[in-house]
Length: 245
Image 1 (spheres, rainbow, N blue to C red):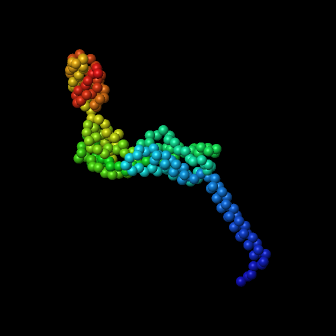
Image 2: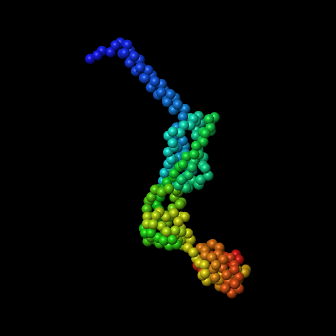
Image 3: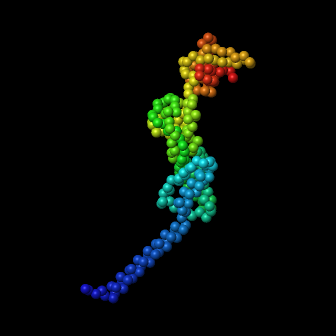
């Protein structure tokens, strides 16, 4: 085996030492830089805590999750506690954007998407239903689900289904929300209706033909079949429209 000369051995030792020093310098530089960069986890935590503190205090279980920020994000470390604020989005929606800012001398602001889910008992369709269908007790069953949004968005009581129908067709397994329902139409266009007008303690009734349709308390246009005069009134019940009140 060939022996290395003293000069070669010294040169290799010197190069190894320089490499170690270079790595140490890089680690120290990264450590120093990291100490002056704002923690992304802290930003996300501030957004989540702001949303949690804005949710109603009840027995419903909420899950608040901030979207992961880009790990390449570099913001100066904030010398003061981070401040979070709403972007005007209603706090009962499933998705919102929360602003997080540094109020210190080195000011910056970043916007964090946040998702809110709720674990709630909700009525779920046992079969598909078409648009304008009423929802009967046999059509639904209660299930506990984790869903985006707040508890007030979902239908949990079968009594709230009465007098309502679906706005659109829905497949089996759909968790019913309040905005999927609309009041039943009590007056349809072309239908003969009773017009009621009050004159002091006296009520006057007449027959009319509906020109528009409406649910309870909605305004419709009706033509008096005798005078042919078109009036506007409020749907009082099925086939009954009150005018002049």
